[in-house]
Image (cartoon, rainbow, N blue to C red; front, side):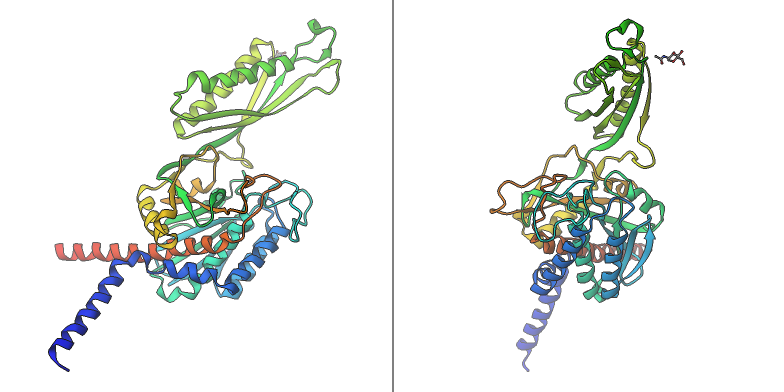
Length: 438
Ligand SMILES: *[C@@H]1O[C@H](CO)[C@@H](O)[C@H](O)[C@H]1NC(C)=O
């Protein structure tokens, strides 16, 4: 072998080595989507999704869903903790050593009668997966399978969080309280989006979704004959004025550039045409994008309800979110994770499929994780040409485009697998730096 050939070979080896380093972030990405799109893999996911769709369960009652998850993890040979937060399951893939990074899917359905007629329609009357959590669970199992098949390459441990009770039950709070996320460096989560084209993602750094709370008030007057109002104290009129006054909070007291919402969605009182009732119950939700705005709104809602009731000679009691329906914090995406997300999503889906978006007034208890560890939440599209008018989430006509499943599985797996490589690399660099400084 002559010298020039040697030099050439060394050059090739060196180039390949460099290539691998410089594309560290995309080490797994393209590959994972291909794997998840393979026929066998895809039909496995579709089967799981349909099984969960047929048996929807409400928050903290996801016993069958939990069982499906554990059966699949058992088949994959993925270890887990159970129960976490009543029905939750937390799986582990990788080296079993730090660093730890988490991915989360929510498990619960909604109290809604499915109106879509198809072979795998909900078999439980009055309950439906109308928010895509059946797909969320399936995509996380898909990621578990991909990661398990590559676990020898993982430079740390992935924590798979199957969380109950996202729809108002505060399942994330119980998961955090269980301590399973101690030492976890970052967490990722996604939501299916009916309006965003298939294979696209969208999100933003900083505030993404609103903080949300509920209120309920009982306005008490004095019942009587409807024809003799002077002997009664009318809580219907008082409550009506309360509703109108509550609408002045956002329009008159809040900076128009600081988006907030107060909606009275419940108004119950009376039952006869000729009887003034003793009391009226009203309730609703309020939303804001900062803790300060949220707390200010909460205080003013209470003051206005009690004050307006007094004007009309009534008494009022106001209750805010309880243990069953806790306050949900603002969803705030970590700025560093945003840059990281854009790189990985660009590698998996192509840079043109990574979109940015405005914040939404909806809320997500993923924010509970973000209060304790850096987290990133994004939307994954499933709209196709044939599906021109997508039905929104929480509609009885909501449908999942099952072609979304491989995208979710691949995105989940790529985000965490590459993350472990990245932080291992940056820690090694850091250690080397310290070493050199010594
Ligand atoms: C409101 O509360 C006060 C103090 O408890 C009571 O005296 C009054 O009768 C109440 N008014 C109504 C309309 O219930």
